Amino acid sequence: MYSNSEDFTLPPHSNGEVEHARAIADGGRSLLDIRTQLVDSTGPLIRDSGLKFVYWPGCAEATVCYIAPGSRLERQLGRARPKSEEDAALLWQVANGRAGSRSRRYFVTNRLRYMWVLTFAQGRTDRREVMAEVGAFARRLRTLHGGAAFPYWYSPELHPGGHGWHVNFFISSRIEHADVEALWGQGFVWVTDFASSLRGPKGEPLRVTRSPREGLRRAAHYGCKYAQKDWSPEHVGRQSHRYEVAQGFSPVSESVWIEWAAEGEGIVGELVPSGEWNNVERWNSSDDPEWNRPHVETWRW
Image 1 (tube, rainbow, N blue to C red):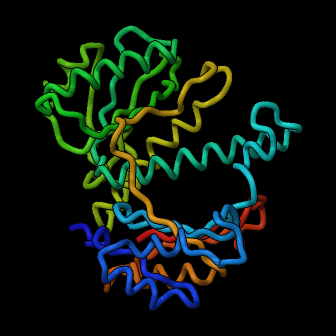
Image 2 (spheres, rainbow, N blue to C red):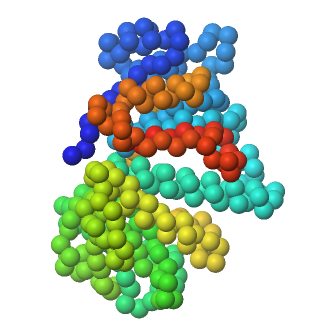
Image 3 (tube, rainbow, N blue to C red):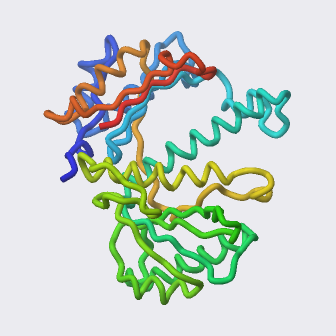
């Protein structure tokens, strides 16, 4: 069973705002209204830099990151034309990291546990053509959902034997194999349930997960591994995407500015359900000697 962490509201955690925030909460407004709108009368009207705590209620995940003044890291370095190979490598690393974290939250929010491998009987080498065919398949798949939109995530993977691309397509509910095979119509298909399976799509052993949520994160990691690995100039054309998702199912986040990174740990302590604190996974960029970006801390449970 999933925990009820989705029901939590981010608590106030800054000096001088607690009682005011509680009063607003009693009136039915979000506590975050105070943290994001109330500013020092002598300060700027809109804060755009400093430490920000971000919480994704549907993902049981939170992070503290330092937001530099101005724009994103890519624009600070000059995204279109990196000034050096080091800048280009850093931007590549940042983009891959962002793809992985966004996908993980999308998977957990939408419970994407089933991965269908869609293959082509006739090898496909044009990645854009492959993505277009899978997009058409996703639209056909809506017929099994009464025509309603549903969450999905997909990305192509290069076959190691040189047969071209096949596709990893993730959804939240089990569908009959014959239905998927008929709607795909391009080649063989098979499915892996990452929330319960003891083996991966290629027969590799998988450890038992502590919770369905852990299985969802494992599914996201598997999908993103290939979305990142096969993302290079010789494989992907201009203006292409690492992966595609169904629109309208993005995770919802709540954020608040904090003064010290340690405040994040205190807020997480109030968000984690009773009995789950021992399962919290932490990561702190200060512990990574090779980290060369603004400070980041993450918690997942």
